[in-house]
Image 1 (cartoon, helix red, strand yellow):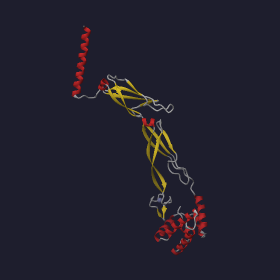
Image 2: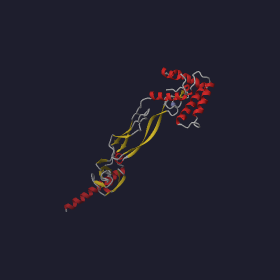
Image 3: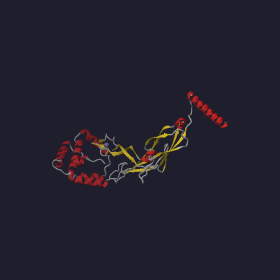
Image 4: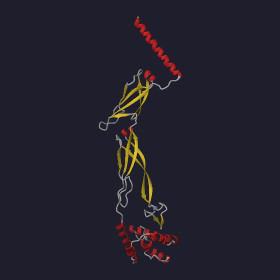
Length: 316
Ligand SMILES: [Zn+2]
């Protein structure tokens, strides 16, 4: 609703510049913050200045009058103030009127955001920064869509602006897939004293992790080369808490398991971590270089010789 600057200055709509100037000076003296320290006076002083700024500028006043013609004024409203009551009364009535028309509180809408985390993050807890766009009342025109009698250029006459906000969401330990986290009051702003909406974060747990978890034990299948299995050596394996190294002994067999102690899931009740079981799977190379092929051939020959030698031994 557009405030009438004529009513604020208590002048007729046809008032001359001189009359407006005179009335403005009179009211400004009454409500100047230096002379009147009440908060109400300060607000009135601002109103008076705003009104005078428009009505004392020919161009602005013309625009303002045009805009006003387009506004629908209730008969009651215009009648009430056409009798030319004192400024203080006017302001009081205006306030009362504002209260009666005052819109009912509207609660802000909820915002829902989906995020995806991996399994180890779900177990250990993590955090994500998310961007939220919320509409706020335009700070320049205060939602009135007009400023100085013209369409507000800051919000393009919408009365609202978009506020982009970064929010850090803490995801607790042991969060379940599709868990819905609530951040109270972080949704859309409420209007006319209504409550803000909530922000809901739906946590999707990506299950394609190579670490399988059951209770507080982690299972990992390690694919290793035949020569690492035969000769032994260091094998790097992932754990929930970072990388660990297993020292494989020579002649490690497929399906052989190794236990890494104290790198499993942290048990909330006991405060202790479980173990990780690493199962060895020997992976046959998918292709061989000529040299590798020859070396494997050589291994086979050596193996055959060994067998024949044994056979020979038994024969004797
Ligand atoms: Zn605006």
